[in-house]
Image 1: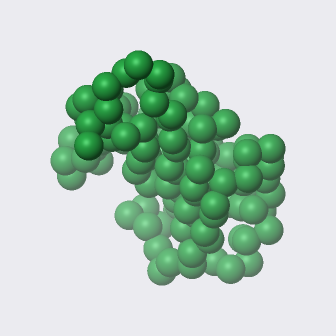
Image 2: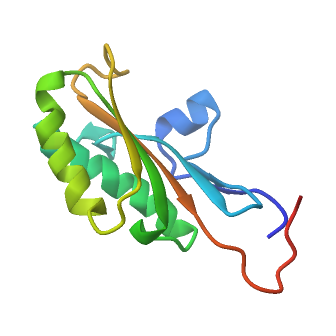
Length: 137
C-alpha cells in the first residue's frame, strides 16, 4: 500500500467538521477517530456499559471496512465523563479486547458535544505489510 486510505460513515460530524472515521497510513497503522454511542443520530444505550459497547462496535465497524478486526487493535483510548463509570467501561473493554490486550488509556474529561454521552473511544490498529508489497518510507 503506498497511499492513505480513508473510511467515512456518513455521520453528520464527519462532514460538518471535516474528518474521516478512520485513516490507514502506508506503514499499516490505522487510526480510528473518537467513536461514541450515536447511531442514526440518536444515543444508543443509556448506561455507561451499553454506551461503551456501542462505541467499540462503531470503531470495529470502521476497521472492518479496511479488512481489519479486533485482533489488529494495538491501542485504545477511553474518554469518560465520570470516574464512577470506570468499572462499567472497563468491563466492556475487556469483553472486546481481553484476548488482544492492546495498550490502553482511560481519561476523565469534562464532557462531550452531546451531554447525554458518557464515553468516547479511539482505536489504533496495525496491519503488517504483505510480503512483496512495496512500502513507503
